[in-house]
Length: 344
Ligand code: FA5
Image 1 (cartoon, helix red, strand yellow):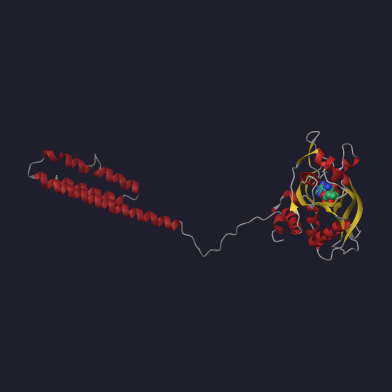
Image 2 (image 1 turned 90 degrees about the vertical axis):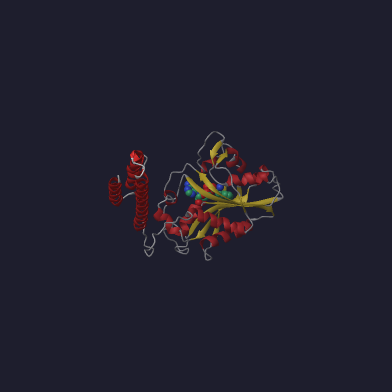
């Protein structure tokens, strides 16, 4: 029995040494110390021993079991340490290496242009107003002095959804909605940015979906000179102090008189070049004094209140300001185009 225990011990030590994973070590543990393990078998056979032998062998069996247990634990510790070391080695990072650059986005140049114009007007006491992109025929046209069948509706070819609903063709319906909400009481001083839709064929300067910014100021004693002064501030803010503006007579059904504002060409300084089509001037926006019919339809007394309104296309403004030659660049979102404007 003694020899048997000694040989079990030897066998166990050899197997413990050979075990190179926690799993194989666990197998050794089961093989020697488990319920059906070799030591347990010896202990079970103790009944057959004589009275004198039993305590001696019992003690020896316990000693062997304790030694095997201690060796297994020692090996388990060793294997765990080795595993941690290997993991640390595999995960080593060289903190002195230069970092990988992260590519951050930035606001779209169109949004920056819109925010810039918004901020200018907020600084002059205007509030930002918004309206729905799916608009009623009434607010898009009728409330703006464009009754059904009016020939000037053709100036803005429209996407109709039903007879009475369409994608708004301009931001001017926000004027009509805001005036209505004021129930005949001025002042009304708003700036309205937003998307608009027209059945225009896409080309370098036209898009079927683009943005507009509308301005409206209605109060007592508002005149054409208020409009001109405001537009002058806008032009200089956008294009520089040395820009001149000129107002040309035009036609919009919702303003009377109506004008278009040009700025002196930045490229040739008014001498004439291909950018300004050799006129020295570039058209920027439409404007005018709010038509009395528009005021009256919204419940304002047009004898007491007057006002001005203007509407511009931020794409065209950004194109002029940054020398962008095709409006489609704003919508195709080529990162090479977009990232040029992160710093402006
Ligand atoms: C209007 O839409 C008027 N509602 C503006 C207005 C408001 C006049 C208040 C008077 C008082 P117009 O159709 O000209 O006007 O459009 C205004 C601007 O939108 C143009 O100057 C141009 O910059 C831009 N625009 C017009 N059509 C397109 C298009 N298809 N693609 C890109 N920009 C366009």
